[in-house]
Length: 283
Image (tube, rainbow, N blue to C red; front, side, top):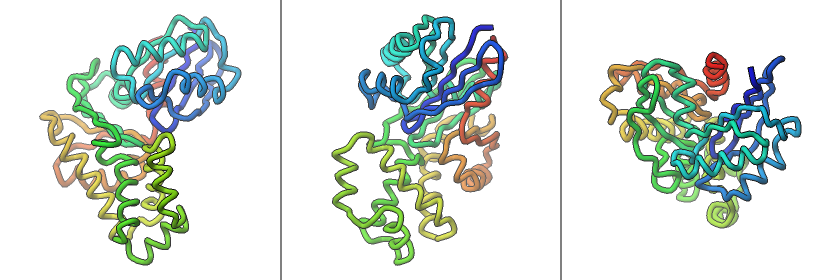
């Protein structure tokens, strides 16, 4: 069995796992890789500066990369060339993050699969391919229920003085009170989606406050209404979630599934372990 290098990447971070011919899996992390948001030079810099040196130049390695922003053939080809060049490997496959989540959560079974992390996405998976998928409009016009969507609400509530004194003080303790600096980071610095998602920390720390619960429930309910309710299979098949936001607010997802009479399959923070099993079973 050849070595396998598996990567599961969102906009904020990439989880890497090397499965050698013999021995135990080795796990690594880098910042996110997204060809929609990064140039080839920026992606190459991540590979060169952040990946463990033990992963460099392994010509016999098989690489399977699943990533946000890798849904179109030209993006997949660009990433495959960058990865193949970096590792000196010709055995490179690149798929979108939805395919990774679907294979990890469903295996060979059917289901509705959702990603709720820095961004959000969903699809109907028929056990082999993505049978139906809604348009993803990204962090500016879409990403309902995601980290940057919820984080945007937190920033708005603070800036528009909607928060009560308790939450205002909690916000400033975490992020400071310099709104001009926040706007500079949002509009003048790279990766505004990651920056917005960082404000979710307030929601995590202040669970139970009615304003926090409203932001979370409204954001996730918007995801259900905008996406899940549009799949006719949602009432016939289990609903699967992966991603940091889904994992953090699983209780709200469970409540919404019960409310809409939808079967909840499982919720995982990361699909990596299940994706590793999926590929291992096929090697």
